[in-house]
Length: 252
Image (cartoon, rainbow, N blue to C red; front, side):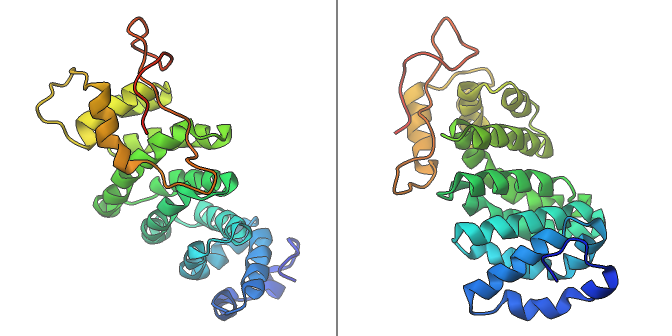
């Protein structure tokens, strides 16, 4: 019945009883529940009823299985899109934290969906919870920046859009502008200058390429069996200070 999106409100009933199944030791059982919830959560009314299961669905993100994650992420997206902002604020904080590790998942689909969901959950946070969310958003800047050069074009696009949203949330006007115009090398300098902190540099000073690489290298995305997901990041040519092409020092 869960797998039918035309199931009536009366037949759907109270989803609380599904909590035990979401914690079931059998992966097949957990997958079946998420598969059903993925379908019924497309209905705004049912998505609002499912919000009682949010903590349990968020916990499902710890599973590394791609199929499991690709069911959990759409359910979370659907539920978060239809709950009231006041109600969504608390789960959004927990969810944003859980999404960060998925930015480097071996599946490009998981990377894309987790980044898009992160972008969505940053927005509904109420003013009184923004201080808590800022810590997580700060941690997202470097992963999002590196994935702007992801080997998957859809992941790269989602990363640029999410970085612009994160910059707006943090009130970083320069970073927001650079993210929207995809000036990756200038974003790199901006992050070195303002996020990682180089107090000796003036606002308009340009850190050396070697310094950028040395500072940012420890924050490169995790490696998969196929190597780094991101394409090399190169500094601009002297005659093209606003762009990315040209030869230069590559991040290892």
